[in-house]
Image (cartoon, rainbow, N blue to C red; front, side, top):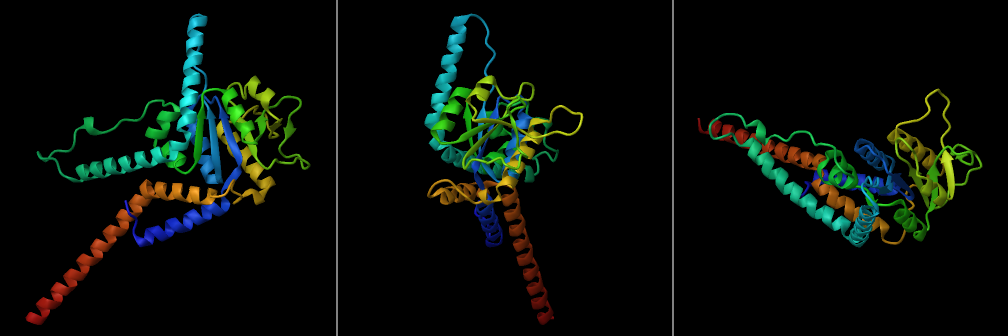
Length: 311
């Protein structure tokens, strides 16, 4: 949907502000979170704080049966990983296509909802969508409202194994910090702590934390001090506190984008997302409705004036 000038000006201002404050040098890694609500809460938090990059390591499938089945599962995971890597550069284009399709479906649905039923009765309950069941990460990105509202602004990658994610991080020059309470971990509030130029901060699962594989691969383990009696935080709350602490330690990181053309890339991505964002569409429809009402008022005034002159 093409936005009216009034709404487009607001979108331009918001994109400029987001670019000036985006954090491209801190990358969040979510390793094997079991609760999709936590996934989505973390994604929403990243967008609000300005953290652009999120990598998700999916929990492995439970292994059943003998070694043959285990080998088949591993092969399937490797194939999935290869497909994800091959399709990584096409992700933005696919999201844009899905967004346009979603716009058309939404407009058709809104039109059908506004049209009264032929028999004069209300629509049947079978036409109403019930709440989504527990979704996988990929399903959440397509079906969940919160996921759509968050991932369209972020750069999200999904991995099927910790090893694959670690390889990509090291190849990209990212320092890896795992959040953990082992004896060698350092407090994120330590005054002398130096934050790397490119930092991947890893948050583990709700029950077990980061994996042993991730601990061994990490350049450092870090934690946030706790001063009460509770032993742990919800992973989404912990993620928000950790990211906010890291950004506060180096406020100059805001607006420092990685690579030439990065700003133009993000701007194009966000403009495509803004064109299909429900809040932007609602604003555009509201402005259009106001314009139509104003035109109607002018027509009525003109009509009354003509009648008055003719009497």
